[in-house]
Length: 338
Ligand code: KG4
Ligand code: ZN
View 1 (cartoon, protein in one colour):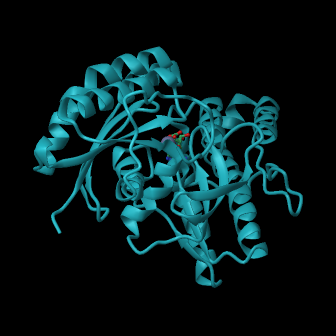
View 2 (cartoon, rainbow, N blue to C red):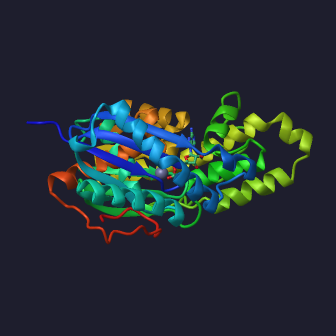
View 3 (spheres, helix red, strand yellow):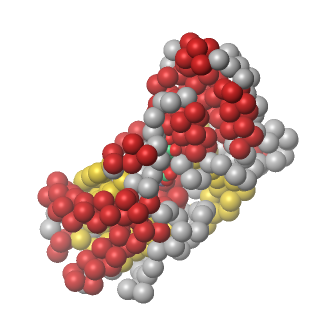
């Protein structure tokens, strides 16, 4: 059978990304242009993000096609993330994907960004099939999702306030470690003592699979305010390690207790926070001593990227589940089948 190629776009937040994948989950190109312009604001400025996407997307597409060595005539479908995310940013990707689909007469496939994160695992572990439990941990979402099939899933737990990535980002801001906070906290925590201070584990009750990180944020703020500047500087790495341990601890505990309770033997971790080395280690150590297998995407597919959007589009492509040009972006949170 001839190879089929999908050209995919991801512009939901501050990364412009364009990829070409084939329908066997092989990534031919996956280019990401990260917007450094937000760093000086300590967070993403939505209007700025969409303007930079507009500036980047054409050239990045050209480069992704050249790197993949594929012509537009060989592209069988165009996939794009249409939700959730910053609406202005999403609209850039959706409008560009729609215009290419129209001009080149190629079918269009709409993808939920969080489903894309889960499918990043499929690129890394081609053999992975549902049923499994997925912990999706990103900058805006923390969800525990039970998958029965590629597009058949149920959210069984989610954060009631902040997301895990947001907890990393806010703590990094409080400790003046810069943005994005997750990698900065991980770096700082490397030489710290995770038992230096016991920050609370969120929603610690048995049989409750929701998360909450706003209490932790308050506890961190209270702790920092109760200490001298010198003490904070002296113990920055210990504080970072203790916070990382609290965030990872609650993600880990909830996920494995759900998997054990409902006898699910595969856990699939995804989203930007799945790049965290401490989280990976904790799950990997657990999987060595249990019958539950744990899957992580390769580091390059943890953060926002278009290859995961192309991968998530493959079952839809096979089912010929295409969208027409009335397709629109929307920002409503959560994983969903579109
Ligand atoms: O999935 P993602 O790239 O974007 C969203 O969809 O939100 O996730 C970004 C989040 C940020 O909050 C960032 O701080 C976090 O992922 N992150 C990490 C690490 N790398 C990225 N958190 C902890 N440890 C990391 N190594
Ligand atoms: Zn994401």
